Image 1 (cartoon, rainbow over the protein chains, first blue to last red):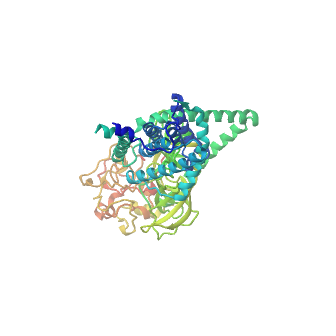
Image 2 (spheres, rainbow over the protein chains, first blue to last red):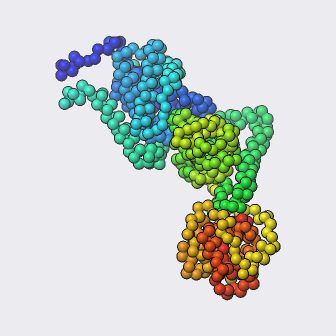
Image 3 (cartoon, chains in turn cyan, yellow):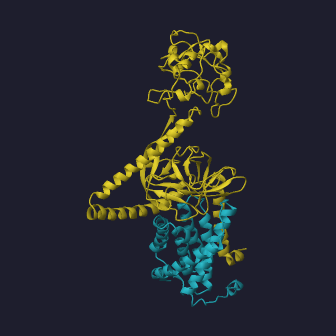
Length: 180
Length: 432
């Protein structure tokens, strides 16, 4: 047992410096739903929005990083991803799997890194956008046999666009944080 | 083991959650070949039910605010009138498309027989209220569902062209699969060359016309229409125009189609809730020579050889062994009676366009007489049926064209079917 306690991973930020946040129930449910709604509605007016932006992904990353609990992060990602799947016509689970991985990764990273400043958030979002795209591509290609093409320029461009929007969105959502 | 699980608790849960989702995914793929919207309907309805009321509300507010300004503040009444006129134009354009296609069809149908045609008889206007929010699933949500009579696989279009088909129906909302989704498929053809192919969406959202051989000449700018082969879209609806032609793989051309309807900015659509299927009727105005009428009335004159006969589409040789039936006059108001040799004489592609109750048999209630039928039959189409049935018109059965004065109790005689080109127009009393 003692070995377990001493095997706490070395973090770049000490436990005291890392703050863990929680959110009220309306925010926990309402923000993802709002993100899904906006994601589904805006493309009707701006068709390219759906091509470049993934608001549910940004919300997943934000909640995962703020809570800093891998289990909470992966469950949040799974829920948001599955809900996103249900709006489309592809088999349910494609976004679910991708966002589960992102939720787990973002919260694990949140434990180790200080992701409160804009630069770190930008990079983390860009990185996780690519991870999300890679997981989705792999699952869709291997399991569902969807015909998708991987494009690095598109991935990086869309990742940067999401990171840019994400930084602004995170600062907005910071207002709903509650210290534990 | 406990220590191990405790140590890697997060990872174990991650693997468990991923495993469950992969399992669910595999089940769905196995069930419906990748598209199992119906099987997962109950699960999907939760999210759709949670999201669409907001979308509907926003659209309502947007329309309400916009309507208030435009109808009462900006130009009172003009907008409403304009909308009505636009609706009228939409209907007229649909009608125009149908009529022009109809005219072209009539010419071709002089040689093609037993052809069914679909007409748009009722549409429901619906407003687009949402999308999937993903470019990997090109679906739309409209504000009409089961309650408005919408069913799965109904065609969705605008006045400009087709949009897609109904994929999933909820009580007050429906999900539309847009034609540029990669799982979509529409039977299409080129307007002038009449080449047929399959219209498919791609991952990038482009629409491709597939299955056109690379040795065909397809000009850029040619109009693409629905072919009706998919049993969803009636024939002749505008799809778009050929934007790019290139060589594809496997001896097929790579044809990119620019959709006629602006699929990225759809606000209102029409759902085709009712199609009317009619037997095509050819132009009756074709003149018939008196000598031909006489020739057909004379029992001693044999029919023309089968070499000039035009094979009906899909007609299989050997499908008929000859049909014997009472003359129509004798059968008026009574059930047709076939002789025993009618076995196998069903002639699935009945050239006469008559119901498939038997080739050459007059349907119940038919009022036309043999003389009338013969008189209406152009000479070069009197044998426009399967070659086999032409062969059956042997001299021994030559009295097939019995005189119009044949008594009601006349013996059963072989009588060739009336070609579609001479079939009476569908006026409601026609057996078609």
